[in-house]
Image (cartoon, rainbow, N blue to C red):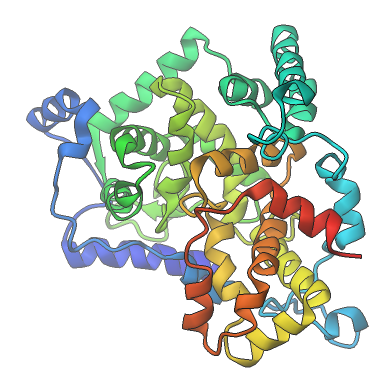
Length: 429
């Protein structure tokens, strides 16, 4: 794992050397004024980013995960794992379908669900009206635990922003707004190499997305401030990764001259801005949007791009996904494996981005409701498996990875909740 962290840093440092630009510099006064003036319309900026490249993309990270091995593990130790034919070769404990059914019990067929029971065929008085009434009561009482329980059945659109803020313990204190303003000042005063990586990522992803391009300015504001936020470093206390360090020029290797770089310890990768984009639908006040994103990141999203054995960590999610397919759709799994289309090669990018940019936004927010409700990312692996189950007939006919990818290229018409319910509670014995 350490070697992966070193590789990312090396990539960043070599970019500095190649482009002859520092990792950080103070902006001249004129430049500061200019940036301040166009703070709310940074999207109109067209800097030349042709020489910048993402430090890594999800597929690079997948290669690292595929090569992970546990040195303390003898292949004879666990018979059940010896038969695992997926790409992930680290034996971690993941839930099977009975355990998932128990964990996601509120997704059961007998429980009302937003995303299913609010469809046009179901009269609103049967579920939706009452669900909204309960949601309003939860908000009135400001009970975070009740909000978390409630949202497992989905959040009404009108209440979602407030419910998420309640679950994430986000308030609108003057000091929070002040903190955000301080981060903004830091952005205006100092130019970081990662700023260009953020610009490039937004241009490559959200700016080309039919749902999210309108939020381009918000994305720059949030992500540039995020890169300066040293409070984000606290998540490394319960993350097995360590924040990247850089050394003051000429002092390489001398610890007293080491600084965390970027200041928040998070080097953005290709697609990173898609963690923020969906939140722009819910929050239009920059400091609130910022706080929500930061809390979502330190609770959930960091686990999707750091190596750990946590049940919500990306390694466990990959293994859970492969195990579900291999156990419950063995013919499909073997077929895809035989034709060189290992399912994880297709689903990995969905999971790493928590499906952002792949699902329609209303469906994505219903999915993220459940992430918050269950305080777990495991639902991402379940949904990925459910998508394969849903398209199984077509996938059984493909003969190459490219053809399999084509079958699964567009997820924007999928309805998340019926897929999850059918996969967990209807089809599998």
